[in-house]
Every structure is written in C-alpha cells, then in structure tokens.
Length: 57
Image (cartoon, rainbow, N blue to C red; front, top):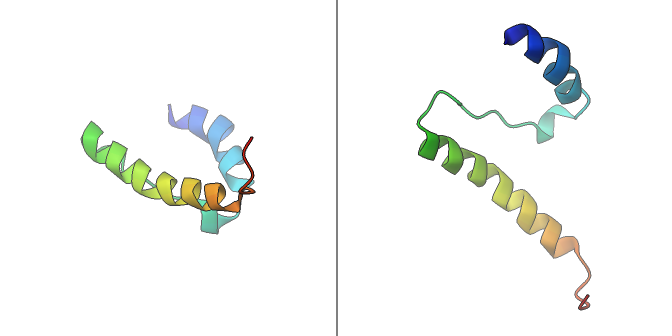
C-alpha cells in the first residue's frame, strides 16, 4: 500500500503548495476522522461560498 501511495498519491500532493495541505490521523476512530476532515473542509467551503457573486443563479 505504501508503494502505491508513493507512486500515485505523493506526486499529486507535491503539486500543491504546502500551506493548503492538511494531515488527518486516519488511525483515529471513524467519527474522529470525519470531524477532523470537516474541521478542515468547512472553512474552505465557506470561504469559497463567500467568494461567489450574490446574484441568484
């Protein structure tokens, strides 16, 4: 599995600036992993929503 990560995922991750990369402990319980992921994604989503024009679709 680690070799697959090194060959497939690591090159993708290294294409992004380090300041937008977050690490989540996937060895935690599933609910804890979910909370940690959402704590990182929700602010990004909210920032994106605020950047949208206020006009209706």
